Image 1 (tube, rainbow, N blue to C red):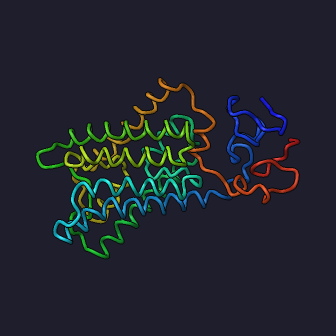
Image 2 (cartoon, one colour; image 1 turned 30 degrees about the horizontal axis):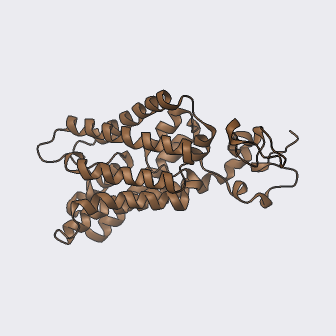
Image 3 (spheres, helix red, strand yellow; image 1 turned 90 degrees about the vertical axis):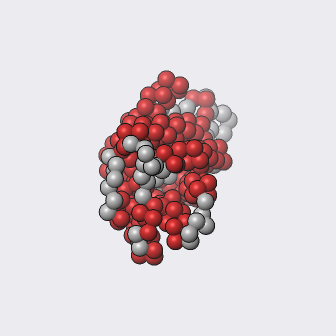
Amino acid sequence: MVDDRGEVSLERGTLLGRGPREAEPPWVRDPRAGRHEWRRLFSEVLGTFLLVVVAAGAPVVDAVSHGQVPLDAQVVAPGLMVMAIIYFMGMVSGAHLNPAVTLSFAVRGNFPWGRVPGYILAQLTGAAAASLLLRALFGTVGHLGATLPGPGISSGTALVVEALLTLGLVSVILGTASGARNVGANAALAVGGYIALAGLWAAPISGASMNPARSFGPELLAGDWTSWWAYIAGPIAGGLLAVGVAWILRGPPSLAANVAAQGETPDDNFPETRAPGTGAGGTSRDQ
């Protein structure tokens, strides 16, 4: 429904201020919008770097300081960091920070498969860079914060726990992306809070990674590949299960979720930068 100002009702699945054809993310309509992909990839590198610095750095600093960072602080800190990252760069790349999230968005239909390899490479690069920094500063103390099964916990148990935790995490992400574009108070608080909650009860079992990139960085730089496969297979399996749950709960993906997963370009945020006679992303309204 179009009002007197030419704005399109959200009830029709479009965004305010854009016509029906313009409501899709700009790179769907205009390949030239791909020129901003480097911004999204850079934000994934930076965001994952910051996440792993905190998530792996907390147990490293705890080991260096002889127990000055208790377990509850170690598991709450990554949740707070993810919350902050969503606030400051969620609209740039969608703030995936996690290969399991990127794959889940793609399977759900919110994210183009052609962009998946770039995002995952960016996430692994950020995680490796963070682990390299930790190693340069502190050596390999504390296994560089690697996620490992707890004492007496088998790799199979760790895999199941990681799958269960990621099922919850990706369900929260997909749900808040549909309702709040994965940016803002609802999404940031929900996702960050879930990460902290999962760590509070499951960190002694599996390390509560829920993120193959977070596990990969410390494993690579510390050379400790204990149960590495559980921290790849578990989160991916949990993410895929969450996609199934999302279909049961909400049906096909929404436009808001597509924009949340894919990020936006500067042209979306600054309409005055568009060429005359164009819509969002530089696509002519007359085409």
